[in-house]
Image (tube, rainbow, N blue to C red; front, side, top):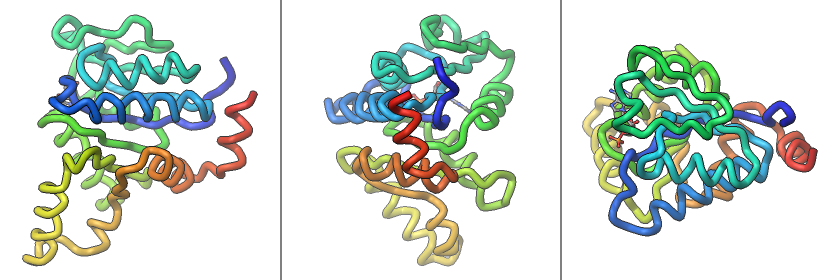
Length: 197
Ligand code: AMP
């Protein structure tokens, strides 16, 4: 397989959620990554939306890199179909390796694990520890409540508009993913070219 055109780190639920739209969106994300010659970097499990996005990426011809802590290998069903599967000792090592191996981050619907990962890379971005784009895919309005609370936090003076502006929010895979990849410095032409190689 050729060098991936870009690497996107996806945080998402280890459950599939109640609505079919969630798995549909995870499938669309994997298909977009595969169709554009990209690499998925993710938590390395087969459960829930994590398994869905990995399988969709693989089936669409994309590369899949998983990072899972030893203690979660059984619980999250480590995905041995990954092109590259790292079994690490701690959650900190998992997050560090995922962050290191990607060009941009994207959160899909998920639970507290997803929230924690999203907030970490977002806060690290605003502190200048990295300059990789951070996206939030608001599928079926799942994050409406969170976005409303974030605006409330801004209105109450705990966050600047520029901080909120660092989070690229969208509901459409075909609009948000190209925007993230472009913000990471990869031109559309390169991504399109790599997709046909
Ligand atoms: P969840 O969104 O809760 O279903 O979790 C999604 C993924 O986040 C799973 O792979 C969890 O193992 C992972 N996760 C849970 N807690 C943390 C944490 N503190 N830091 C990083 N990842 C976590």
